[in-house]
Image (tube, rainbow over the protein chains, first blue to last red):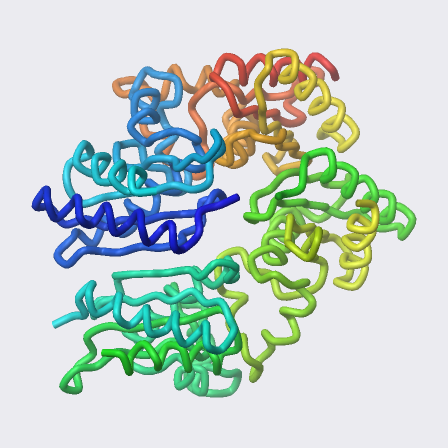
Length: 130
Length: 130
Length: 130
Length: 130
């Protein structure tokens, strides 16, 4: 079971709305349960680097089965997974969340454009819309 | 001047509608005048390889300033640009179209999922919706 | 629904057996329905390049939803998809087969080490064992 | 002299057994004395990111001629090899072990899926089975 395009659109619309309320411009990406991109919207004026970062945050949340801010905690110098940020397409700061149904990962959402906390808040708004 | 997210959404909606009428499932990507992704939708069931191909078709149409089916003609063995498909992110078959306004390129659209002709037809539907 | 490790092992064992009967040494890779590697065995003496080729054949069969020898037919100069071999991890010669259940792709198998025909025959032996 | 496929299978079987006893799901990779993959099994439910990490742990143990947890110690900020994690395919946390015979490296084993300590314990179980 994976997210459908309709579900991805609904999630992105909610994240976009949240970003507007917060006065920020975001790139929002949603991927399936294999980490493959389903949908992406880049709000006008959002950072170009955020395209890759949003895609990779969604991917990371799926392949690591955890929010990117949790991966951050174990990827600092001296902690268990320091160095994992050098793996292909892995992002170790907030804004990527796994999407679950019946406790199974069905996809991921990644948001990039503002602070990691704001990114994560927008990503959560997407999940809440499901 | 580049395409806005609202314009990209309108284009993709038209391409999605066209794909449904044709009975195919597509990935549709729209990029800005720098070749950077603005929006992407992957219809349920579309080929996974089409994600990369659609993005790269939109990119190629912008950076080569021509439809990808025109690039195809000059990228065959023995013709002028043979080998260009090995350049980063370049696609040399139909389905990528530049988007112009007042004769200036303001973005690109790439569609992948069916035959190159069907891909190009869906991409054109997106441009017609502008 | 995707292939399990037990199913992948069974497939690989059958491919290995087939390779021994044929007197060749192969690398056999099985991936899930997202193109991610589940299992790989490299027979002693098999070509080192076959590691990457086998993995990519299994991947290609999943993401293109067709046997790699079918992709080959449409990826020649002058045909529809010429140039697609330059996409990330795409292989356009025989030896990669999608694995289906109830008409849905649940994974892929890729074999590399001998001729494309022999590779495909070993891959088919793996599927027949399911 | 390098590990054979039969030896690699025996190692992986022991690591799989250990993982089941520990109640975790792992990806286990074994490579030859050149760092090239010989065999890989991904237990059902194991993290997708663990595929790349397990392969790279086995590789790192061979090319650096030391367990990855020893490399970790000299790869932290301020220590001798800080930055080496950015080299291609290098992993600097536990779970990768070189495999030796008569004091010569004949291959490597990498395990990923749980804590670095658990990963290393499973890798050791593989070596103990030789």
